[in-house]
Length: 247
Image (cartoon, rainbow, N blue to C red; front, side, top):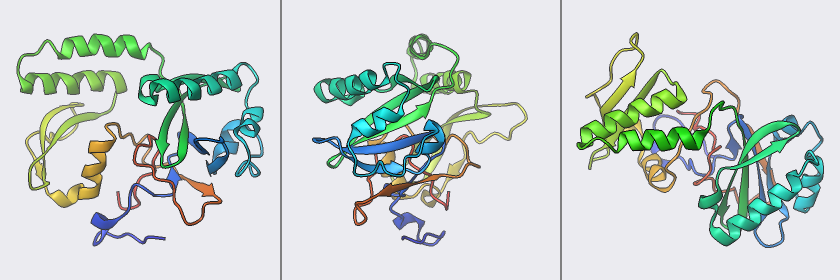
């Protein structure tokens, strides 16, 4: 296992942490025969079932543990649509498991299809809100106005205490170029941060995966189990990828 501290965090293989964040669960299947190859240890917490024997078994064994209310049909349909049309076009795919709403996000990692199930807690129509926000954002003629309005709309949607637009310069250091925050917080707008603040490999991941969410900084991540002991699952395009312990 790679041991990381502040002196070598720029070499940490953050794309293969072997863990996922706790606001969802993950399983991976071989893309041709749908055998389960990787499984996060928190699956049983969400399904309320013993999942210890799922590794190496067909996907149908996992489906049998789900709520029978059309989940199996929806899951197979999502895989079929994604393979024919591209997973980016169907993500996130809405499912209901044991009466609870989930978003299913699928991507290809090597020979594996990675299935990530995130709890869906939003109380409004995401597509409607985003469509309205994009129209408002694009009404601005300047880059500065567009970025500031983008930060404002994102804060309205996710209700974080602070939203920043962070620009990476050629030498890797960053600058806060737009910001919206709660009134009681100190402003960061205009501040510069050294390149070591966000290491090079993390900056490169931002180019490959445009969405990165840390749902709860205080939660415990869940390990990913596999019988492929020599091959950690590449989570470059994962939405649940766990946070580095140095973060």
